[in-house]
Image (tube, rainbow, N blue to C red; front, side, top):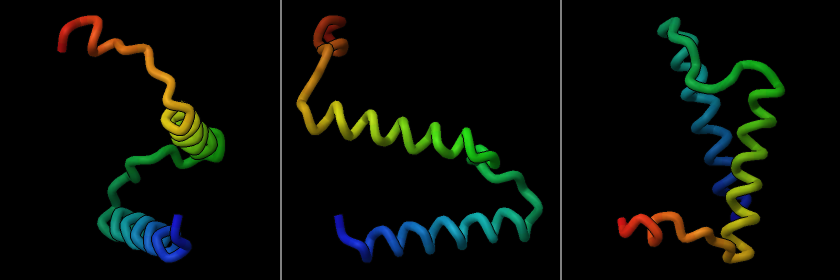
Length: 64
């Protein structure tokens, strides 16, 4: 992962959050730390399963 992408993602998120605040719209993310940690956990879990190539084959079992 490139540090430039991380900085760009942080900048994009900051600008998006500022835009939502300027137009007085609630942000589409949990505003409290436990919610943010939950999002990080979801991403971490997804990446762990993807990296280990685990799969339950749910879509294959329902012939999707």
